[in-house]
Picture 1 (cartoon, helix red, strand yellow):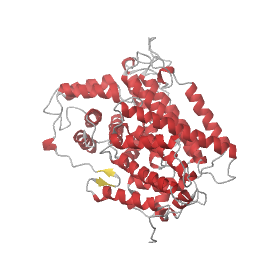
Picture 2 (cartoon, helix red, strand yellow):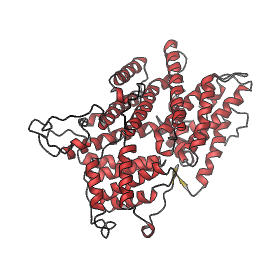
Picture 3 (cartoon, rainbow, N blue to C red):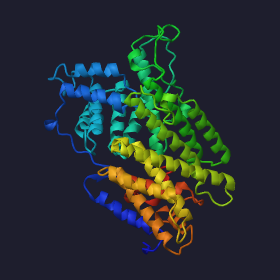
Picture 4 (cartoon, rainbow, N blue to C red):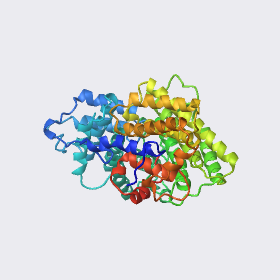
Length: 518
């Protein structure tokens, strides 16, 4: 292999590899994920019934903000049945195994939020895994249990395992026809709405993981005609439909519905899906007119967002904690979607697009990065920057990355760091201080630290302005890159680094698997 000296502009790639090697060498890590221990049934201890009630309440009141697909009264009733006969619980005869698995995973998620550390709640997750493995057949509860498990894996930074399990979950949902609209005039509203909520949560998570990991979506928009969930919260879903398909009696429902946040996240994910198809697929076509169309759709979404869900509007005194969480989630998701539109123009070749458009895209991308960095710092000050807030951590990494890449594109000897570079640098330090023990966050930071070191070296060197990025894109593991210098090639290295594939596969395989990561 060609030797690369320490003064080379791509030396930071090798430094990042060496930094990340310690994760691979440790027995605790596998393919980028923290390993999950074997289940020890002899040492497994259920929470007391009071503690279990607290964990379930915490899940609904603080965790399930926009991924709200379970019916709370049903889960609470199942919890009481679960504890009604302690002798039958673990053998799975007291309740359906997948219902038991759902309860265990709710315990796992709540434990992870209440006691942030990589293996918090893992024993509950393993108990849930054991239950679903022995479940026969496919039904709604099977999908819901696995979807809860996917979300726990994401919260505990096990992204590869989550992605694999999500694929199985989506296939089961499709077998049940959850992606298709059913014209039932009468029926159980809880079952009908739970089916819609479960499918659309699969859809949102599918789009999110596609962006994070740079892998194709498992759900294709052309195959979906399912309606969005009704804007009716759980307490009102016990009512039945009349012959016209409407709820039988008028309801006094607050405009601040919890399910409203889920629906807005679904709508935003549909826009993101179109952006991914146009700008980040294997057959991408990056054009200014397409970007303007996506920006228009995003502005319409933002304009129609109910005020109580808009984090830029004053926060009503009546907002419950779960709605406050939903506001944060939607705020991050919206700004990230905007960056997905602008980012392809950041590394544009000369004369590829109009200079005015490239300047606008660059300034907007940096502005959005600054906002996301600010949001992240605020979360850290509130003690909310733990592994459970995985999407926020990813967005912070993406924002800092864009600032660093823009800086390395334009660096020159004697350059004074810009204000936004200094802000991003401070946010990186904040991430490092608040995410100790988080595997994925430490991988993010390893790349950011080497990029920052490279920028500092470039500032004090006599190299040409763009040498850092040009050589970066010519790195050996990117030999199969497209001719144009774009995010496709840059993302390949980063996605492989963060998920562990950098050590596992050849460059051709890496490039084929990575198109939109970050």
